[in-house]
Length: 158
Image 1: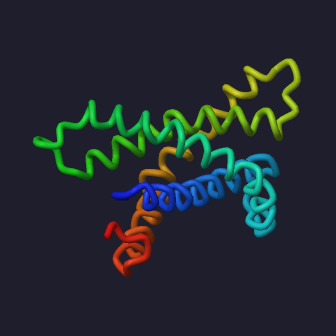
Image 2: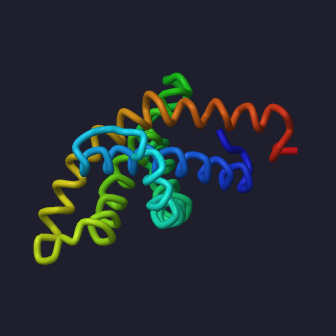
């Protein structure tokens, strides 16, 4: 886990890029009726818009809330430290998924007067994928990559 502001910045960039790209691929696949190679390339076009928005929301708002709430839930004297990781990840998804679904609804869904309904539907479709991707795939992958970056001394705490 990040120990300095620079490490937190780098970790957030890695996590945001991986999660946003994953979720964009998922949403494009939903929209076109299935997964195909073209999804992976098309996702980069939306990543240009959605990545910076997600970074700002996560780095400046959600990460602080998630960390504070997680420390309120997890007793570090009684629980394994990984429980804190799970709590932060879960709370982050609980905040980021509705926020990013709203952004996607506004930018890409052409919801018109149905914006609330489309946003709620988008959130409902995105939440399970966001949660399981964060807990089982993207989160562990990014933490692994981040630990390797830190281990070789890049962005180290010293």
